[in-house]
Image 1 (tube, rainbow, N blue to C red):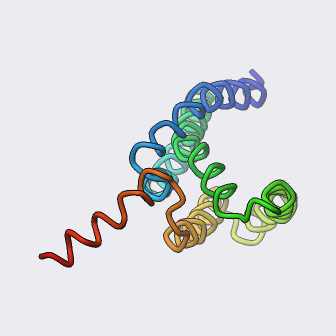
Image 2: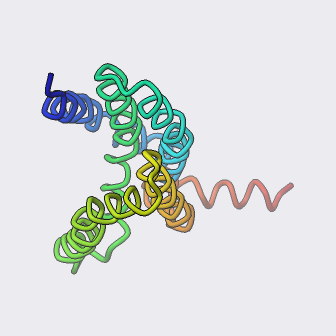
Length: 168
């Protein structure tokens, strides 16, 4: 059975169905918490999912594992897109967003297959893609933690919180 198209399409449909709900959550709680906690959950799931897939080598494990990782990754994607757009000045928002997104996709999306294949070849380990994904996700998590909050609700509350803390 060829599961390649099955897992890709099923995962994308799941992610597509969940992504529109995430900006609403990030509007209420802030972009950073949704992005950071979603990425952190994704980071924690990468290793066990890859171990399960590598150990069982079953179609069910592959499809289910990809769905779990895709749904978890999709959790923060709507909030990330909003945060990235809001973090840019209005005068360059469209072109800046397009440039940042395109360069990232070209640099990582375009080279990942080559790098992962090379890592599997030199290490002989089926877990090499997991380590690559863990490293990339950890770097992304650090970047997300350094991003400033852009959600209007959190920015509006910030002065109130600062006064409350100062009043003690």
